[in-house]
Amino acid sequence: MSEEETKISGKTKISKKALQDLYIKKGLSTRQCGKELNVHFTKIQKLLKDYGIKARPSGFQKGNKVAAKNRGKQAAGWRGGKLKKLCIDCGAEFEVFPSQDKAYVRCPGCRGKGRWGKDGRHKYVECAWCGKKKRVKLSEIQNNKTGFFYCSRKCYSKWFSESVTGEKNPRYKEKVKVHCDNCGKEKNVFPCHDEEYDKHFCDSKCYGEWRSKNLMGANNPKWIGGPEVCGFDAYAEKISFAEDVRRNPEDKNILQVKCAYCGRWFSPSQKQMAQRIRVLFGQKGATGESRFYCSERCKSACPIFRKIWHPEGFSKKAQLATSREVQAQLRQMVLKIDNWACQKCGRTIDNSELHCHHITGVEQNPIESADTDNCITLCKRCHKWAHTAKGCRYYDLKCENGLR
Image 1 (cartoon, rainbow, N blue to C red):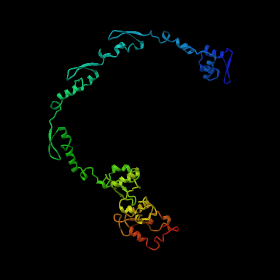
Image 2: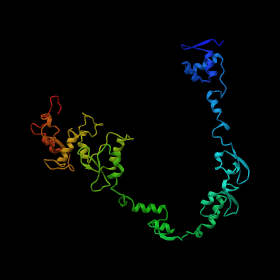
Image 3: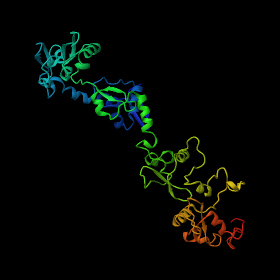
Image 4: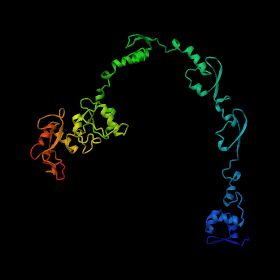
């Protein structure tokens, strides 16, 4: 291909001569040539290969020519090259740069030893038991507080058994006699153990027997009431996201929750707590909701109890709730206002089931269906009697669609 031949790169025609002038004579790089010719530098590299123009040798670029003049003796910061010095330890001659003249005063062979001498940072010491010499670091000698060294663990154990154990130990004290708090036998213990522990035992068996007599059940200082109550610190954090919890006013260590039916504070048993936790965390054996009830009366009166096994319209009337469904918040508010006692006969929730009764029926006065002034607390017996009066009978309170 002659020098006059050209190649088309996109819309630009580039001749071989023009490319040689830029790349060879002017010493421009492929990127600089691409900027001059308004093409990408990869196209310049392809044209160089197509035209047969060889790449310039290393160091031929225009910028390197200027840098080559500032090297060695021609550099402005030239200080005469490396300096020759004599090692202060062995006297051998070695070379360093002028900038390292003050930093290095020893030859490369003596630098590893430094000021520690011929053996470097080590020294030979004698074993305190067998007398053999052992090479140790100077740092070990400085940190050793006893001044004794041993060539092996075996030598140390032999020296220790002969020199430090028993009465030879400088801190040795004779054992004192004490009596076992369970069986009464004498036992020798160290003085430090006698000062540290108030009670002493022959073995673990004696300790277990004494513990079963003195620290079990109500005798334990951490006893709060047994399986019938739950500790506040143990369970409060686990159920506080789903239940209202508080400390028992009489005993701060006992946990109290609200009854799901009457809303009264009470202390649940550990069995109730375990069932509720299984449900909340979806553990094995969880069924239903296992809500908290303060008594069996509240449980049987609650309209939502056993809904899984006995849904709406279940045939066994004996399993249905004894009270009709009202808003749970309204029922709890009314029971609390009336101090959990029947307003007709005076029976309390401790000896009777209590219901929330509407003075004016919901069908007759729907606006005041959730008004506490329109409700009253009645026991199961009085509630049944109230609905026998004319105009308050269940038949009279039927809705048009047949529902009460």
